[in-house]
Image (cartoon, rainbow, N blue to C red; front, side, top):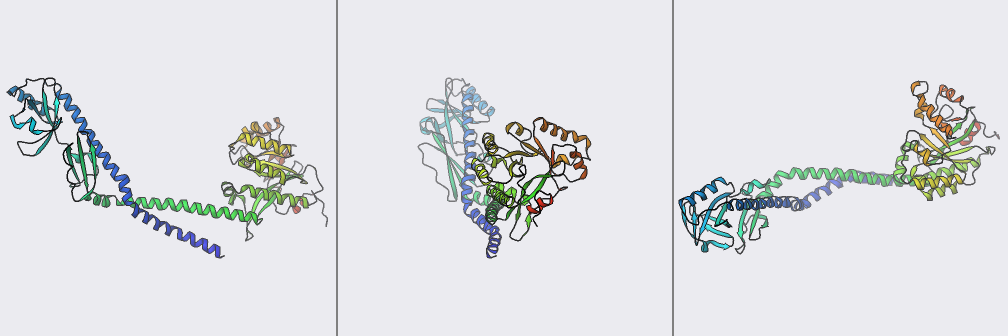
Length: 493
């Protein structure tokens, strides 16, 4: 009882623990999130800006290569320079180098080329109109050299995360000092153009805006992490707890066989199917649907099956059933069990020395992954005296391909096809076709789920068909009672 309370408290505390864990993770991982997501995003935007600068330079060069003008500062030359800048969105101004002088659309400049040359082909000079520093590039034309200054690109147009006063961009020619970093810088990024570098300073103001604007993303991230971890860990804990529970129940012999008779057309019982039930520690008997799925997925089904076989062997050997030679007891195996060579060897060993004929029913609820191994193991079972039945024919994974893949002795036609008798006469041809095919292949036939006299009458005429269902008996735990009822053994009382 103390263990149950402890487990309950653990499950109760799990969501609280996950909330605390997620909150702490969100708090401590916030800088990491910005470093791994926001910073690369800004760098990507800066790279796009750099690509635009390079593209502008390429287009400017194409334009200059078409200019073929006299090497003089005439009215015609000034007109061409002005017209070129006006018609080219990328170009703010074009100037012609005439010896040491510079010809602009307004006339000769006060600058000399030797004064403004910083790092060829780049030049830096002050604009004669507003006094602001400009950076230009020398581009060679077909017969002249030109200084071209670009229209200033709006850096903010390339940043989806841009905000006013969040970014500072400085363009520095190689050889010049690195620009001074603003005091409120969050981090900086540098784009290298070879002969120049672009320095992007991201201010703390952007960080504050991101915290305010994108905190809801962190909240959603937290909730998602919490939900995911909660489901994942709960499943893991539940699976671990369930597996331990099934293993313990198996060790305590809580899984027991129930027997359902299989009769011939005269109503005589020819054998039984051993069906697994779970009689828990409270005495409640649980059907397979309550545990089989977990047992298969948690890989504890093998031990449970072997335990059922041992108990069935002991119970049937204990009851004197007159040593009827053709009396059988069949057991269900999944596809994965049939593929498991070690498990099949254990089955053969456990069921050796039985006073009944052991038979194996291969269920179609699971798909075979290794047909070769399964074929080999089926062959070993048949050599050891087992009959092989195909259960739930027509409803599972294998379908009729198993008739080809395995040496089957008998088929069990699923209840789905039996239920149509007396209700959907037009569909009886499907049932009859399955029966005809089985007869063609010389296979025994068992019909499952027989529950009405009408169904019994339908199959009584077919002397070679066996029946199983609640019409004859529900599954019983007392095998002696069942065998006495059907006069398989004599009453010794």
